[in-house]
Image (cartoon, rainbow, N blue to C red; front, top):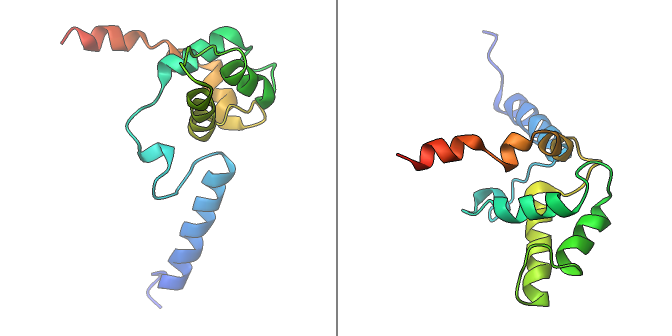
Amino acid sequence: MNGCKTMEQVKVVKNDKKETLIQFGFSFKKSSVHTKRTMMLNELRMIFDRVDIIDSDSSQYKNAIIDENCTRKRSGATRKYTSLYLRDLYMLDPDNALFRALGSSQQIIYPSSLKICSKY
């Protein structure tokens, strides 16, 4: 052989990488939150202002969104949708490595670069 992988070998490697990414919280659904346009950073900032980023569990984030209405949504249905959407987008689970990284990097939530870019 010439050292090239067969299609089956490529599929196995591709699936292994995909499974690894899924374990870290990435989504590959056709209509996942990663393919939509909104990032809901304002809502995420409001949640992080209310709930401790790392020393909380996922139920505290849900409670802050739905029961305490920290994202200032008008109806219960909208609060539930926001909770589901943010959970799908950012996991809202300190046990997840990507979420912990997001929580420890406030630059993502409070990006000073947006102020610079908005001037142009």
